[in-house]
Image 1 (tube, rainbow, N blue to C red):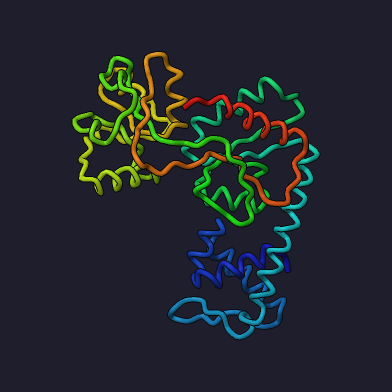
Image 2 (cartoon, rainbow, N blue to C red):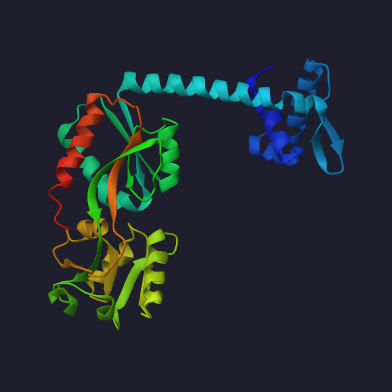
Length: 300
């Protein structure tokens, strides 16, 4: 009996279908049937009842399913511990960044790496949604995360970096560029680019405006790294409603500027995140300190 046999048993118990389980396992149905039959012969009992509803666990299968799950979990845990040890030996840093924050933070990580890191430290960056990033930190598949404080978790420590508010990003030739700040009333008649509907900011902005009877003229829905929105702004076709962490990146273009939005909108902190109780090696501490210091220079 192998761990793979137990994994096959568990997936078949979950799907109740040889075909579906085989698809999940990337094996042929015939191969999976043979493997399950071999496991049953080794245990000297059948584990499933073959019924019109599919493969149903019988009393023997039900008797071992908890032990099978624990055995698979234990082996996965062993593999994770070995992987963590190898990472430390190789000085590998696995960094997670919330999807929308990647446009602003990935360049800073690359800058830090090019200026401060020796060749024996290797950095890997992954994008995740907020809750998924927390899960990866808790499983210790990530060493450090860059996220927002709107994804709290009792077992995750958050170090605030910067209070992210809201701004209107415009071409410096746009009439709004001369304003000290804008309100929702000022947005009437302005062609807008907004984050696309898959980002939580989109629904928040639209629902807030709807509650105040403000009808926005949305011309473009963009991803945070979408080149089309840069073209939209440079050609002075309209304005972009965004959080300040996005605005900071875009105003590096000398043709663009950001005007604060003065409304009672929900702000949130960009943060460093890590699993509570984790002790970082010096090279991860140095990266965290770099972000903390550079965030103090952000004026927007």
